[in-house]
Length: 470
Image (cartoon, rainbow, N blue to C red):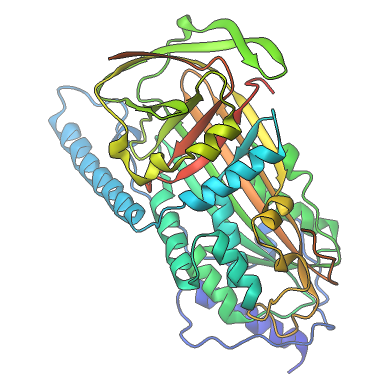
C-alpha cells in the first residue's frame, strides 16, 4: 500500500475513533518523505482529520423562557422543569470540579514568574488554558522531557494529570444561553510526517482535541489555524492571533483556547460610573470607575497579612471574581511570594461572609501576549526546548523540539459583566535548537490582581492590573 493510501486509511480511522467506533487502533507509520498531492484549503473544515463529538449543554431557563407570563401556569411549569435540569447540570459540573487536584502550586509559580518578568506591566494569563496545553505536550513526550512538564504541573503521574485535565474540561465547559465558558483543543499536523494513531486518539478522547493536517509551509495552513483560534476566542484576541506563524519546519502545533462571558449577579449602575484617579506605577491616570454594593449574601471577604480580597458573584453561579488589593507599600510580586493565591481554591472557609461591601473598581480592558519559554525554563521545563523525547508522537521523533510557547489573554469588564479569552500555541519543529535556560470600603485605585474562578474553584484567568486602560 503506498503512502497516500495508508494516510487516507489512517485519517478514515481517526474519523471513526472520534465517534467512538474504533476499539483497536493501529499506529500510523507512513514514509514521512512522501506526501499527498492535495493542497489544504483555508477553510478549517476542509482540513479536519478527526474531531470529538460536540458537547451538549443544558440551557438556562431564562434563555428558553425569557418572558414568562405570570398567569401562564403551563409556561411556568416548563420554566421550573428546565430550572431543575439546569441546576442538576450545574451540580454535575461542580462534582467534576471536586475531582480536580488543586493547581495552586503551578498557578502560583507561573504567576510569580510572569509578574517578575514583566515588572509594572499588566499580566493577563489563564492557568487552566496553559495547564491543558502543557498536559497535551506531556502526552506527546516521554522520559525526562515528560517528567519535567509533569513536575511543573504538580504531579509525577501522567494518568493523574490526564484525569485532572478531563475533570477541568467537564467542570468548566458551559454554554447555557446566559453565560459561556468554552474550552477547545486542537492538533495541527504536518502531512509529510506520520503520527501514532493511539496518541492522537488519546488526545481526542481525553482532551477533546480535533486534528487538522496540511502543509505548515503553505500560508493557507497558518490562516486556517488563525481562523480556528479566532472562532474559539470570540475574536477578542485577533491582534495576537495574527502573530501566530507556522513554517515548513513545523511538525506539530498544539493549540488550546478558552472563552468566557458572564454577567454580574448585581450589575453596576451606569449612572454611578465616574472618572477618577488610578495610581499606576508610571503615574496617576484618569479612568472610569464603577461603584456598587455587594450584599452580605453574595460577598466573601478575606484579610491576609499583605492584602485584602473581596469576591463578587456572577449570574453563572459556577463562576465568581476575586479582587486582591495589596496593602499600602506592598507590591504585587511581594504579595504573591508571601501568600500566593492558594486561599481562593484550597480552603474557602478562610474567607468570611456577612459583610456588605461598597466596591469601587475601574472598568478594565487589559491583555497580554506572552512568550512562556523563559518562564518554563526557569521553572525546570528545559528538555522540550532541546532535542526532546517525542517517541509517543511519531515513529521518527529524532531532532524534534519545542520552538515556541505563545500565550495570549484578554479580560474586559464593564457595568454588565465580564468577557475574557485566552489561547496557547505550542509549536514543535525539526532540527534541534540549543537549550536556553462589618462595612468594608474596597477601592481598587492602585495596582491589584483580579482572578476569575470556575466551577472547579480553579483560577480561569489571572489579571495583574498596573494600568486599567492599556
